Amino acid sequence: MQNIKRLEKENFVFVNDEIVIKDESLKNESIGYYKDAWLRFKKNKASVVAMYIIGVILLLTLVGPYFRQYKLPEEDGGLALYFQYLPNKIPGLENLGIFDGSKTISGINPDYYELLPEGIVLEVIEENDPTNPGTMVLEVDYYRYHRYIYAYGTNLVDGERGVRTITISKANYEKALDRNAVISLVNVNGNDYRVQLDIYRYAFDQDVDDVYFWFGTTATGHDLFTMLWMGSRISLLLALLVTIINITIGVTIGSIVGYYGSTLDIVFERIVDIISNIPFMVILTLMLLRYGSGFGVIIFAFVFAGWISSYSTSRIQVYRYKNREYVLAARSYGASDRRIITKHILPNAMGTLITSFSLSLPSFIFAESTYSYLGIINYPGVQSVGRLLADGQQVMQHHFHLLLYPAIYLSLLMLSFNLFSNGLRDAFNPSLRGVDE
Image 1 (cartoon, rainbow, N blue to C red):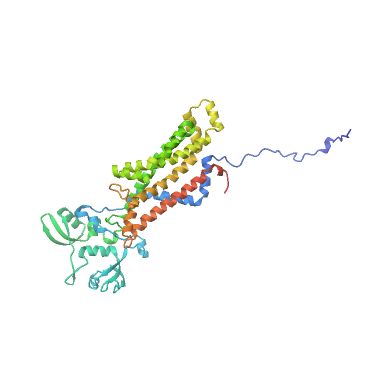
Image 2: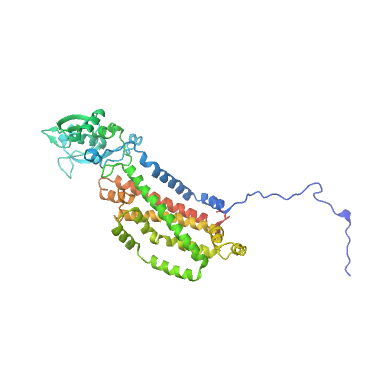
């Protein structure tokens, strides 16, 4: 038998005889799913910047049309047409030599150049234009030059500057007098007054140097800044409506089909195959030809097959979660199918659905702008951003600003939405939860 060695009690010594050891509390607070997603989203700097850009665009879409402090009168034969193609002019920046309303003009008669008042010509670029001999190329303050040619014209009369007149009503003549806009009264014919006007004072009750068009004016003489944000309202509002409708229809049908499966799933999959194989252009063209370009027609055309993406996503998510233990437990407690779908399955798929929603918005905006640009979609009484792009392309050689600003807006919007959506997709990815990047 093995010898057993006995240890005496006095040989044992307590190391921490006077120190009380307690369990330490957890220092890290518990993090829920959505908070964890937000923390991971904030780490994606590009997505955060994109989120702020989208916020600024949405704010300008709401308040941008109200920035303009004047409205061009539509009476007198449409006075707005007198202000077409003005270059952009921004207060403050004009003093830096940029966005100052300057423009290069050619074909100026040297004798007419001598008659131009001081302050109009900024620089003589060509004293003899090689493409049009005998004329000059000038860089001018186009707002002042524009006011001048609408009062005197560009033709000489016996070596003198001519007089350009506008016929207005008696009431508008009184308004012009109050605004100190009458240069001379040519004649009166009944209730019609033929006058030579300072059109800036007449239209805006402001001197020409106090009138600013931040993005310039369009072919119809309207403020491009205002038109851009009005068009943005149409694009974003339709994008929001169409996406919400598509998500609602797709999630509802996808949840039911995914939950019950079997024959219902087979039938709906065949229906989806048929609808998805009908070309969208055919649907849109037929609807427009039959019912016109109303907003309801556009929404229906984009919803007709647009819900399929949300349907497929939600169907897959329901298939993924419907046999989990907590779902089986809820079913064993007698929970209804509706409660199981809405309370136990869809909340777990919410991250994927939110990502799908955010990705659907830029897709619609791009599609709508494309069809507007091509002239397939024309909204009654409203110019969309795509239409502004098409109009700007036609005159881009001489009025590049009409193409530049809508293109910058659409590029920023699309890029921001895609970066923002990518950030949401990564943030809501369950496999990345709790992972430090």
